[in-house]
Image (cartoon, rainbow, N blue to C red):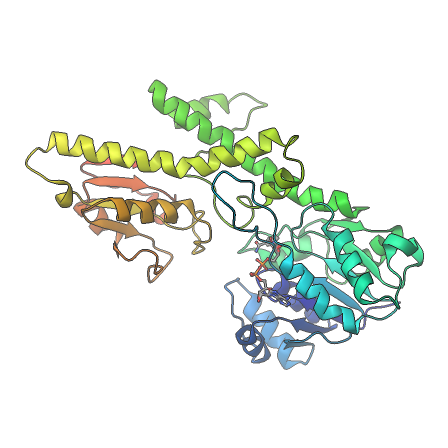
Length: 421
Ligand SMILES: NC(=O)c1ccc[n+]([C@@H]2O[C@H](COP(=O)([O-])OP(=O)(O)OC[C@H]3O[C@@H](n4cnc5c(N)ncnc54)[C@H](O)[C@@H]3O)[C@@H](O)[C@H]2O)c1
């Protein structure tokens, strides 16, 4: 049975490109989002997010009539859920729990329009068991239909988890080329999901079960987190032992089987800094290394801030005629990784904010990828690189944007969390 109409729930960084790819293959696609602005923008053939090449694809999909956006779910043959999965706020020191309320609300939206033969795919990054929970929510809402947890391969509605691993900035290419992990709740669920993705995916669709597929995505990001934590811990150890960590890592990486990542000011973004908690909260006794890595990476911004405090003291000792209010600090970079404008969960942003709040003198920020500062940085001036180089007494390198990888003439004290000075 083919998929005549495909519905994507959540039209953000993942859902909109996915909807656009199906529509570009001349499938009828209904995108659903609770954000009226997103829906209106898409229906005008425009996009509300930044992603190279996506605007052209959405524009032709909408003008040719293959893609439309709505705020309430309509009947379709396949539903892909790509809504946020953040964690719930918690007290400091507590283990954050995943917030599945967006997924639950997406399920509430599609349940009334489900029919026999439909396929539901959870694409959102999810804790182990979330796909079974989706199927349970749908089964409770639609007792007239059968679902795989009871009916297996004979179910009226098939359910699967197919996590997304695209890299922002390369989504259009990676959606087509990347291999997909397909975790059906039954063999039939997986088969149907492969049929659907093969509409545009050229990578291999590798079949597993739903729980393994959920864990696969969490494992990928936890692996990065643990490896970065190792590099961050090394940087703190080397600082204490007066060893250049960048030289050390370069030397160690000459070993044919060693590949240590680079340290930095912490770990940010909405994936690597979030997803490992989904494992830790499920298995707190067992996930000791993953938990420790999270804590190591989360503690790095504070370590950098302490370095800045020490630098202020050192600077004032070397310049006894000056007061703290006459000391200018420049922070280089705010984004959570190089060469992007995304400030979500960024340790660099947290560090700049903290410096500006604790320091009585001027705080300057250089961030070539934004044109205005977020409102949280209200005691900070956004300046050009040359101005910061010239005006600051203490320089804090936070993100290795390409603009910063040039020779810079600095006077005063330099704190380099990225090893480029
Ligand atoms: N962005 C990435 O690079 C990336 C990569 C891999 C996986 N993921 C995962 O994909 C999922 C989606 O991430 P994203 O970056 O696209 O998020 P996003 O915030 O860009 O988009 C989510 C969209 O869902 C909409 N939404 C929320 N609740 C809804 C509901 N009940 N019904 C309909 N729409 C609803 C929001 O309005 C928003 O437009 C998350 O689980 C994320 O962890 C993201």
